[in-house]
Image (cartoon, rainbow, N blue to C red; front, side, top):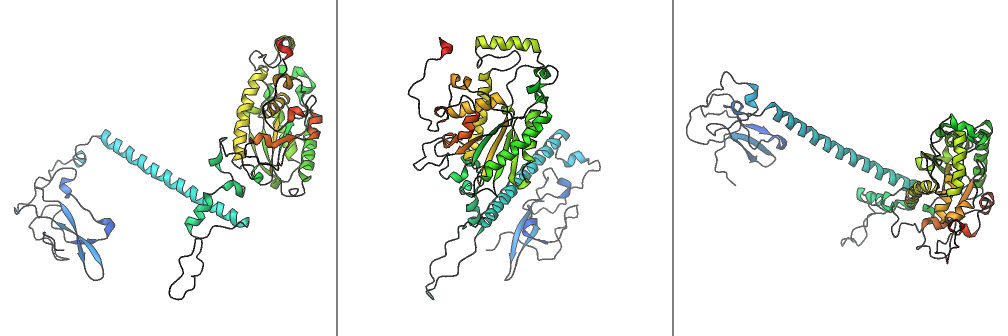
Amino acid sequence: MQSSLPLRARGQASTSGRAGPGHGRSVQHLPVRQVALSVRCRPHVGRECPRGRCALVARALSDSSTTEFAIVEEAATLDATPHPSPPEDLKPADLAGGLTLSDLALQVHQLRCLVQTQQDIIYSQKAKIEQLTETVQEEIQRGRPLPTVPPPATSSMDGMPPPPRAISPFAMQAVGYGDRRLAGLYDARFHSTHNGATPKDYRVLPERIILVRHAESEGNVDNKAYSYIPDSQVPLTARGHMQAREAGQMIKQVMKSDPEARDNFRLFFYISPYKRSLQTYEGICSQFPSHHLLGVQEEVQLREQDFGNFQDHVGKQREKAERLRFGRFFYRFPNGESGADVYDRITIFEDHMIRDINAGRFADKTSLVLVTHGLALRVFLMRWFHWTVDEFLSVYNPGNAEPLVLERVHFSDDTSWRHTKSLYRLTDESMRALKGCTMEMCSTDHLPRSGLKVSTRLL
């Protein structure tokens, strides 16, 4: 289609008679990315051209082999009067179109924010690509079949189906957006306790949940240690370090009792931030090769009940006597906690842990090990099995560094209605180690009880 504006021949110089700066330019052939649809002449940057003669328009010149763009001047009027020369006192601020330094600084800031946003998007997309690539590689290593692209319809020419096509990037992406839990991978989309969160495939669940009270500490030997050592800094005794290593051996025996996972099991640790728990964790880990140790996470919610700050020995004995009169579970120590306070934070921890379990974080022959404290361990079981307060008070702390094992139960019937917690039960040996615990208290059905006895605390 012919244009209504005349075009100068390629390579010819301007003959408009304009000699001012920015004029008299020849036709330039530029690639697409360098085409300027509207450009002002140099003296009028940031200002309106007084005669409107500096608009440059892009015209496409086509031939049989290539398309080029030519930037040509548009004659706004027939007046050939040249543009005025730039004033002698032209300042840099004039080139800014009257903008103040504050306005320019604001524009620079906005541009930087835009560039940073674009960089963040690029980094996010790059991380997603790496995640999907890792998923595909793990699928291939596990020998799982990957989805293939369906072949096109049979050719009408020879009647033979075309050869199978290679897996496309979109098929690889489909693997990444499937149920990653079935591949032993963590999937945050299922990080919920809503309907359908409890996995039907038990391989997503950890094999065992092992509870360990810390080994013997200086506070277990001498209560006066709490009067000059912060509770969080009380260390293990020499005997306690030995107990921690023995606990590692006992856990190893439990893990190797499963013939299917004796060589490829993994352990993930949740630990209290207190020094005696950390030292117990280190002693347990010393008994395992590194390939059996999946990871560790410090959880403040697993700490010991707060009995106050530096504990006056005589005053603390008086408070413990008062606790017996008030009620052991609900008595709150000055500057400390009650058993009910510990129950609240353990409830929060268990809820988050169950969501991680349902999301497949501990799949593929992984077991959990919780290194905590005596009362916190009993409260954990109280919340897990829904003990009453009286049932909790009837159970004693386990021995130092004595593992208690919650094993996964395999049900033959439909388990879709069950909560994840109901799929685990204490082993018989663990119940014997937990004095005061009964089979009824460790039931895994999670059905409502027919009734409760009136507590002697309320009489």
